[in-house]
Image (tube, rainbow, N blue to C red):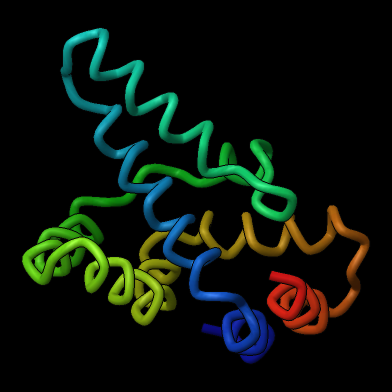
Length: 129
């Protein structure tokens, strides 16, 4: 993790972190075989993840999580829903090292908002929530 990325993550709201990880989880699931109605549910869930900062374009940039990342997810899920989300946010740097598209998506979201200093924009967005 570079210092620039460390600053980006330091000021990034937890909700953005776990939402991007959840997008990667959903995309991982979509790689497998499943009934059409279940696939539609996953796609609709992905669509609902977007907001004013994590737009549909940003969510689309996230690649499916790797098998190694999914091992972390499975362990976190043993803790229960809310605690699993905490783990996704707390271990976001690990997920990002395994899936660089997570950092790329955050940076794109910042550039899209016209911010030249990633951490300043994220901090501003966090105060607005």
